[in-house]
Length: 129
Image (spheres, rainbow, N blue to C red):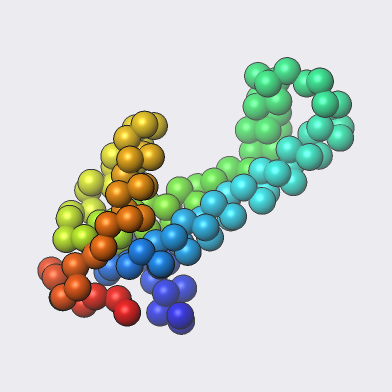
């Protein structure tokens, strides 16, 4: 488990399905918890009937110093986990750029979650236990 947490920030290596799911959960938690806390504060301060556009303007405008660093960190972790999972399947990490397209992202996520990795050592390293 120690190697899993120390490898979260790296783009090299491989992630099996369990490690991929755990890294996804960690990244989304890092991103969503501050957004929920700030969102709750905005609703408390401005009221629940704030228009969506104004809410997003406040969330990523006035509160950007709180909301943007976790989003950037989570995006980095998500990209790294996609790349390592692709490495586990024997594909180049560049395929991770497909997550930038909204509908393709969900198909990629499903594929990476379901597909078994290569059982032997490949060019990206040894298989994860």
